[in-house]
Picture (cartoon, one colour):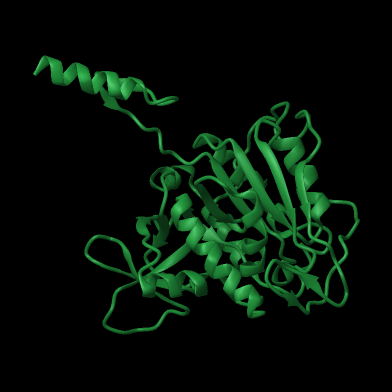
Length: 319
């Protein structure tokens, strides 16, 4: 018995870069990279988004992106990969002032005006080579809701409330997603709203990228990435476990009405000004920027040439 135990201990101790305890291999599988999609114009929030990107809209006196950074920092996230587009420089300036403790990597989507989030996600494939959490940058939520999302192959879901719209999922008895639905409808199946937060293992991400490649090759650049996830759940190539978000502790902000409701959920809390909170934080140069070549006629991809009208990054004073 002792000989067997020592043999196991020796074998485990020979595995490099993995901590051990009493001969048991301990694997730290928490996600430490986050992918934020922040390319859209936020047209339904105008006039607030005329001179600032949607993700910098304030809720309770705090920018949406600032809340996300704080929430991700509290969960041990070390790297942010951010897909930008509209008012790209405003997002960069904000992050370089307020997320200097993260590794910051950017992907610029030059065709954000004429493509949907599937295209932004596809562009990010070149920058992701580790498990990660995917988050839309129009969400506000309590930080503790992320607790269950920090390991791979999870999906955040919520009970459906009247204000919600968009994609829903059905779950099986093991709380795994059994189907995606593009819109909520009343039927016999219990459906849950997607919160637009996902985590992926490398195995799942590689399969997602394969499907994204197929969609882009077919010029389906105006789809939502949920369409890809739906296809993959149907054919069994993607398995996601549901993590439930309390419907009273998160909000998705698309319109001015949404913003008003989110303000009620996350009211402004008077507090003294703290040096370094959104001002005075040391900045650093952007790293590893991918700028996809823009052309008013075509955009070259790995597998095809897609005809898309491109956009030039705006330069304006950020508010």
